[in-house]
Length: 225
Image (cartoon, rainbow, N blue to C red; front, side):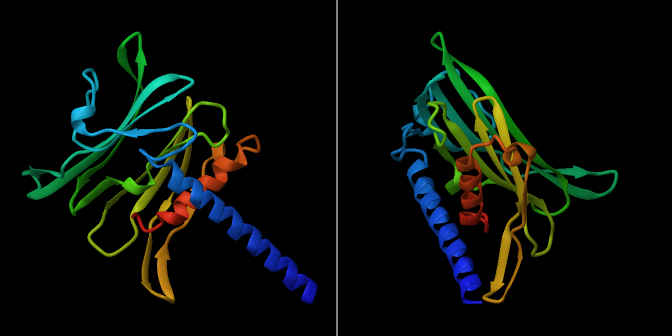
């Protein structure tokens, strides 16, 4: 029994060390902080001409990697209400966007776009980024940035978890983790927090650093903060 307990303790210690190491990487990879690829935080006034977007600016970041000079922006719309008069109900929409732009021959070209919306919600719609989770890394050290985005969506009138999504762009590849926020009601009772990784994350050829970082990022922001 003593040997079995020691093995379990060793596994727990190993997991703690991995999570602590990844947590340090997370804190070092946020926009505007030091990382192998050094991102620079931008304000709205810093954005060059040719960078168009919808909604209000949430985050903007500039970095340079093997692909060239890049800008990533996150935006959200306000809650938009409209009266569906034929049924005498008020419906609401809220949307969010993320864009990556690459400078090509002096012009900013859109490489990819994320668009998601909570549509025709009869309650208060949630569609918002977890700002603190936005990060830029080069975990596999190939010189090409990985972009990490996390956001929540919901349309419910009760106290229940929000749907939450973690997306990571590595070049043209997209990795996704889908689940729920965790609501903590007491030290002994909480709901939500579960997640599932997509086939890209589960692929045996995916760098373990990607998987470890995704799990640690989820745990750090599991309450949507």
